Every structure is written in C-alpha cells, then in structure tokens.
Image (cartoon, rainbow, N blue to C red; front, side):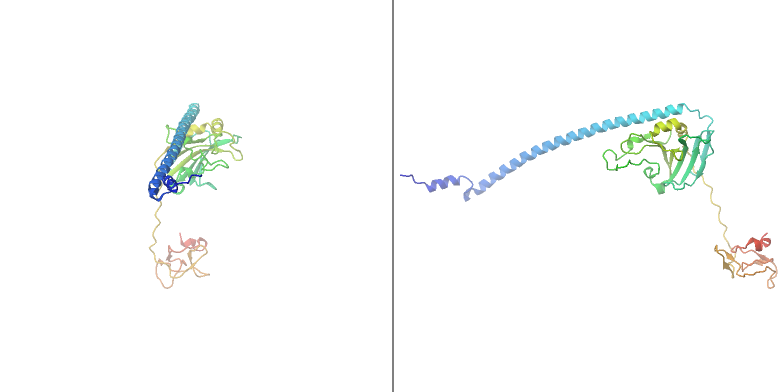
Length: 335
C-alpha cells in the first residue's frame, strides 16, 4: 500500500525557502546582501586591476620623460659645443659693424661681404622688414649669407607664427603622438639673448630648419641662413651651415638690441589763409584756376599786393596756399 504524502510537511519544507510570503522580507535581504557582496568583490578586483595598470602606465610615462629629457640635454649640449667650436675657429676682429636705430639692433658681418641691403619684403610671410647680409662675388656656394627678419609682435603675436618657424612634415599633424611640441629643439644659448631653433634632418615630426630668434620689446628678430636661389637645403642644416656658412654662428654672437630712436615727423604747416572763392579741381584733386584761358595781368579793382582768391595768379597777387599753380604758366610769379 503506497504511503500517502503529507501536504502539510511538504509545505513546511518549501516554506523554509523563499516561496513563503512570511519569509519574503528575510529572503530578499539575504539575496541583496549576497548580490552586494558579489558586486563589491568584482568591483574590488577590477579596481585593483585598473589601479595596477594605471600605475604601470604612469611608471612607463615617467621613464619615457626621463629618457627624453636625457636625449634633449645631450642634443642641446652637442649643439652648443658644435657652435662654440665653430666660433673659436673664426677671426672676427676686423668685421664690420651694422646697426639700425629704427628697429633697434646691431650686428657684425665679415669685412669682405657686400654692403647690407634693407627693405620691405616682397611676398614674405609676415615680416615687417628684412636686412640681407651677403657674401661678395658670384660663387656657387649653396648658402650665400643670412637675413635678419623683423616681425611686429602686434601683428605676428608670437614666434610660432613667423615664416621661419618649423613646419610639420607631410602627413604629420599636431595631434600625432610625440609631435605636440618642439620644446626640446629650442636651445638657450646663454652667451647672448637668442634662442637657437634647430630641427635635425632625421626628426620624426618637423621639417629640418636652423635659425636664431630674439624677442625684445615690440619685435621678434629671426636671424636665418639664406640659400642661393635655385638651390635646396637637402641635408642636415647644422652640417650644411657649418660647412658652407660658418660665419653665421659667429655673426649671431654679436647680435645685440639697442635703443629704438626714430626721428619725429616734421609738423605740417597749418594753412591760415582763406580758401579761394572761385576754383576747380584737377584730376589729382588740386584746386586750380577755373578759367580755361587765363591771362595773368594786374588787377584793376585792387590796388597794391593782395591775396589771390581765384587760383588764377596775377603779377600783383600773393599765391594762395590752398591753390596749385602750374609752374609752366605761373612759374615766374612764384619766385
């Protein structure tokens, strides 16, 4: 005979679980505690992993900075030593002086070079004025001299906007990793107030370039080697300038800012004479005689010398400063 099931016993057994209404609060609390504990364990594990990963990345970044700093220091020391070595081999005792008080600087250049040429640049990239120092003679040297390009800070704002500032290589952007800055290439010389900007030929980010820059007062002065028209600077600029234009490094050591002195413009005389009552304007806007066939003659109405009021000058009249008198017609009365 089969044993009968005890419904009440089965119910009591099940009610010890989570299916009885009377235990639902207790069971919900237990489940919540278990879930929170599990989440905390997983979170702690992930946090530990990410923290360790972050620390490892920070450590690698610090190591990279130390390596880059060491490389930059070595690069700058080598560059300074190279410049000092070149300067020590050049005799500049009889070099010529050049100075301009208009833009406030002076510099020396070799005695056998041409007289410097100064002028407003044509098609230049922002320079306000440019001074050219050139070798004498018609030779085939790749480097023919150097320029001092003067930039107005009010217009150019900063060194990075000047025409000589290094440009990124094709396909490289400012966001490219490791190409955000060229600080390692800006070399403080110490001997004179100029920054030496040098990008070597094998740089990964910027096109090769070499020049000095001084910022003083209202102006930026870029002193830059000049390549002969038709030639190209295809190698490392430090090597090429050292071999073809060593005088450049000695010339920069003489660069010095001086006080800017400019002559005051002469005041324009104020015209106090009355304006003529009769006249016409020529093609240049000048006041001239309105009579097409004016024949100068003494006035019949006014006695004695008097002021011309028609821009038609007569022998007994004073020239009116508002008028223009063609010299071919009135010249003898203007003496």
